[in-house]
Amino acid sequence: MTNSGRRNKTVVFICGAGHSGTTLLGLMLGAHPAVCFAGEAWNSTRLGTTDAHGRTVGCNFCADGCPVWGSPLPPPGPDLYEVLARRSGRSFAVDSTKAVGWIDQQAALLPGAVQRHLVMLARDGRAVVNSGLRKYPDARPAELASEWVAQIRRTEDLAARWPGTVSRLHYEDLATHTKDVLSHLSATLGLSFLPAMLDFWASVQHPLGGNEGTQHIMARERALRTADRTVALDRTKRAYYLGHPPTIVLDLRWREEMSESALRAFDAIAGETNAPYAR
Picture 1 (tube, rainbow, N blue to C red):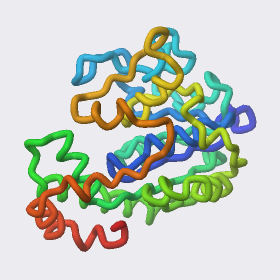
Picture 2: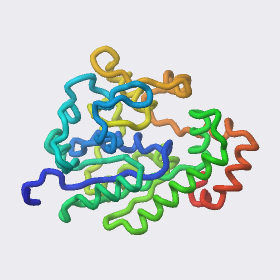
Picture 3: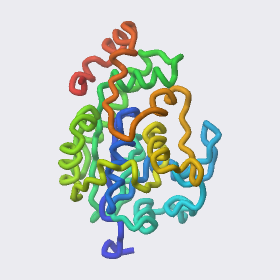
């Protein structure tokens, strides 16, 4: 296929550490009619298999017949983002996979004419580690802090050598100054900002993987519990997200939940790395 016949024109990779709001940002962008938010697109390599929770890997919202992920991807080694463009009718693809190896691989496969944008979404590392402790209560704070530092360093290295544009955002700014941050990012990516991007809860999207809580609220708001696939919540998220309103709320639970010993362990290992991200 020549570049002139290509439908996918732009790929946006949202990177950073887990629990930093990448799914939230992706869904905002995906509410734009030119954008297909793939979610964590690396999951496309295991469509139809069973994940660690016993669920079939596929679209988070469609029970069957998903127009984007419902058909097998054409072998061998498909141009994933072109497949998404042809199935969704949208020229922008957004991928929130945070594994640097995947991003490197996919960016290298893109034709030269395709615009590549990297969005580094950062969050105070203490909030990230606290989310990990909430999800895995037997985990050691020092280990989670070390994992966060390693991921941030890998991501910073990726940003330093990225061949396209790099945008740096903070989750805390996105949550509190949503319209301003999203408007500026949209302009950088070559998108027109639309109010629908702030009311993404009502949009129809087809992401793989990502944060269950945010997507649970979308499913609830669209009344998908009977007709489509339920976005399940694990026990660590139920209390917070079951009563969560369909709006963006700054999550600073780490300030009340992290113990003094956990904070000391984090600071000893990650305090210096976290300085530019602390909020």
